[in-house]
Length: 253
Image: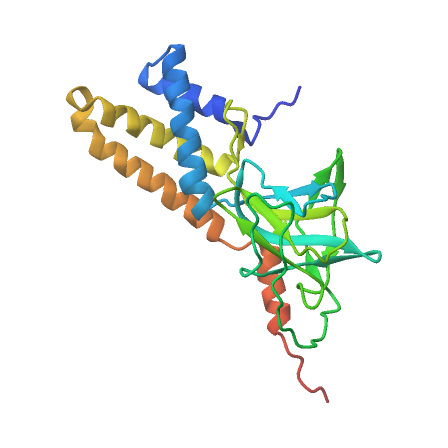
């Protein structure tokens, strides 16, 4: 067993930590606090400070339709392996999104010949079947290759019917939370979630804690400001990268 305290904390740990501070207990209170913590983390911290990036692999589909993950917030990249290379597809909002049809109908799109970046578009590092996948690049940006569209209401991703039936890869921002409280929260965000839970408890019991609500609101603002400064401060590597990127060597004698 490590002598150090674990850095990431589970949502269940944060709920227990907040309940300890207010003297709360009971399954109903734990359940209510877990829901509040999940909503705060996914709807505010995850959207503003700590975006969670996930990657999902889809098996080939005969209908060209793929169900979006339950934790899907927005897409970042959609890729498909074509002729031994990974290609990113382009968004086409005019691509028909089928509801009852077996497959989508392609709307002709005018494209011009363009050069393909040699480096490609990097997918986020991720795990697949227990193995870490790093350095995966997608070429093309969808130019003259294929297109996709997203039906947010039906939570479906549809691809161009002319594409081959190959495995599809979706990189997306995730809500970052699980309903059961097992989600792991970075240490820098733990205090924000805890202070928000305490504030919610005070606001629910105004008669008892009315005089403390203002102080707790300030405690939450302080925690969020600290988190903002933490995530906004560049690392040493980022500073050096920016320096060398702009560095120009002068003439020497």
